Image: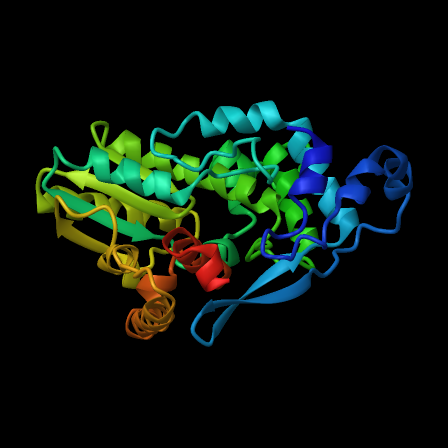
Length: 333
């Protein structure tokens, strides 16, 4: 992990338009570093909030931290990357370990590949436990970071000691959030790195209780497979207890135990993908209207399902690609 990558490709949230970037800031890091070290402040700073669409009228708030404290957090992570990677290796469930590839400094991989893996590995089993963590990033207790890295007993015995990596990350991420100890900024790649530290430790705890457990986790989305409903219920109870140790809670609305096998894709995707566009200009014009009418109707009837992993701009891009594939450029554009 290079700090220039974290500052250039992992500082601003991915939801910001491409013209807004920190490439120049990262390229000047070596020159700016001495000046940043001499800057004001041990005082915490506020993030800039940026509101983006989520589902229907609901919006989520992504954050852009102050460069002084964000740079210090990045430096700590880069300097201790080897120790952090050892924590990631403790998990046998994580499908979202940070990968240093692609357009981001810390890339969790593609969610569709995760779902394909879940689908393929579930078939020997009869039941599936599906759950996630309620408001994961906004609810992370920053003091749970040293708990995850060093254990709660060691962390409490050395509370505030800068000799512990967990305490340094705790302090620096809290400083980006105006000193708050609940919540980490949603947007920067450093938050993905931190969330995976906690997630992998949770995975390790669950695996120690259920050594033969099969399942996968993508950030906070979790799927586990069982031969009986009773086994699934036992695992859910233990997962709730483990999350509570880190001051986290499951999302009850998105938690279910259901019989499998099941399809890899929801019906609405199959329905839209199978839409047939005809090959004359008048018919295609009608088909485009019908296609979007159907898509918007599904969005109204299935707002949480349709948009849970499909942000508006991704949905629009997907619709655009479907039309480009199905229609000729001359007739449609």
